[in-house]
Image (cartoon, helix red, strand yellow):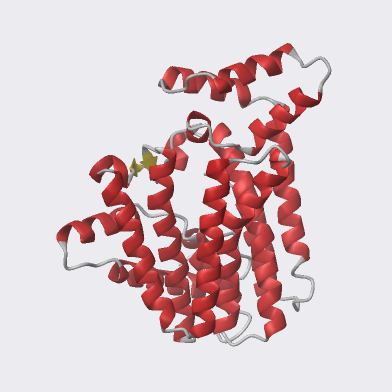
Length: 337
């Protein structure tokens, strides 16, 4: 296997080989974990697993485990837990966002309806909980705290900021809870169950927290600039569902702060605030926002958060694993899908 098989530009071939082998085993375990005797539950649970994905969270668990005894069986269990948790959130998110596609396949709610999609997400959470129970009470507590933050992030995204909140800071907090919390837990689990010292566990968790914000900001850019065939999602889905993203928030902030807003900015906001139900209207809104410099500003923010994540690694000793963590952060903001 090569670095291409894990989607990461790792400079150390031996490390890449180990990670690829272990990730393949995680993939097997994931498929076993979603197996159900009930035919509907089995088919619906396998839907997103079979659609593939980057497996970034279990990869991060396996990578931070390389700072300790990476061959411990608990590390594989931990990697399975974080991906099952992530998959569960996707079933719920797609219902709330009315997303028609996920990873290039029809979303579960498009195939079976909202109720089945939500219940399938719950089933995956249950399977993740059953697996994490075998890792001990501290792991159960971390998983529960992460689940709480995931819910709070979705809740605050849904209701939006209060009049007293700064919309951009509110959005960063949403990203921290909804995305970064699980990425931080993925990093924490790998180091913890590889037997690393507590200070190493906290170092990689802090790295994961900042990396998660960078990852989602990069996604905001990708949603506007990439081909839907590459991302497996309809470009501009968040715009259609009036879900805030950083480019739109930055544009609104500029217009609100300007004494004489630029006519072009006002025209784009009029498109964003209009009815985007039709594909033509959505494409027009995406095409208008895509070249605006708020998109470049969002990318610059993603890079800054990734650099802050890398700075968190300073206490770690130099070597292939630290280099790989740096490469991991860079790859998440440089990707196109």
